[in-house]
Length: 496
Image 1: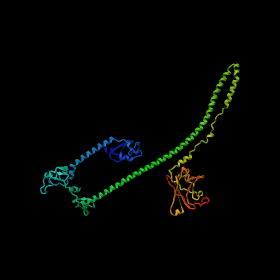
Image 2: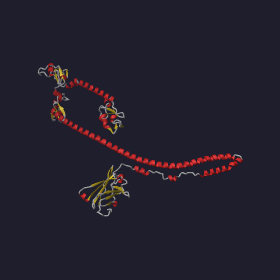
Image 3: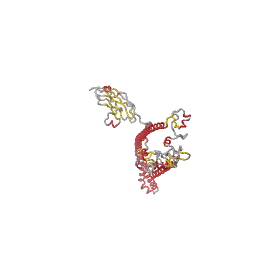
Image 4: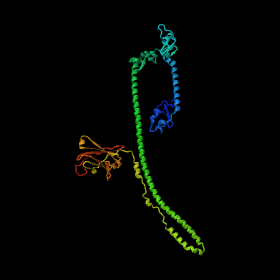
């Protein structure tokens, strides 16, 4: 079983640090993994992709203390195993690694600190000094104090010199490496240099090759660290761009939902209006018909009783019959007249024929509903424009106003003198009903044309006007340039 993978955060791939559990039951590191994913009380789980809602913020997510305790015990056990492995290697693997060329005669290991002409038999080999020592040399070279008390001493074994160990040996001939072949890009010992494969190849000292490659790699490592810094910066910028994109999409999503909810609310209002109107018509006619039904039911009951009474009287003797016959006959005649005088309230279909709703036009409009686009280029109807001494009224054609959504108009204008100096003035006209009512410089004429007033102009001066419309989706192209000259004092107002 891979314990590491069970204790690793799915984002940073490290052991959990301050693990917290999400509503979907998956676990993340709180800082920085979960905090980077948390946005507007929502956090998207990287494992199941569930967009979890957290009402109290990230601090409300519970901490998994039991998992923290398991990780701490796991770390302690791993450190203990590593120390055991390293201690085992120090006495066996390292000694084997250092045994290269025996400094011995036969099977006897001699001291490397004694006089080379009469060396004594070695008692110990030091893996830190890379030398073997006899008893007296060991006591003199390794006093019982720091740092020698930490040196590792083993039974005498053949050891290479410190220089040989640092330089290394040839993997093929087990001899000390002396040079480096520049063509083959391989280190060489004396036996390698004698081979034909390296004959005529340029070579340098191993120390020089080591120094050059070390400098190159150190420079590469420095550049790699700099590149990593740039990568981290780019990563942060990309994450910020992703977050900005998601926020922008969320805003657009909210705007679309709001527009659709508003449209649905209008449809619901219309539906309620139509149904209420039909309910009113139904209630009025129902009341009238129910009144007639009640009258008929009441009359039917009274005539039934009268009929039964007449049957009883007909069975009486003649004297008793004649006493009430006249009065009873009047009652029967009256009941017959009342029954025939009541008119049936018929259902008048003609009145309700106008109560019909046909949404085909609206359906076509909804079917053609698309994303908002930039307004079309405004068209100025010169035949309806007007001017005075200090004011010019520009009339926009109705051919595209009714079809476009325009939030505002920009009027760019300049006089002849300003044109020569490349100076331009700009006038912003809000295109909303509220602004038109509140005395804005744009209004709708009786013919349905949008009229825009440009005031505070100079008398008898030629001006050039250019318009463009804009909305949330963008800005339209500029209209054709309209030339207009204001009037002189007391001159008649005539369209130019």
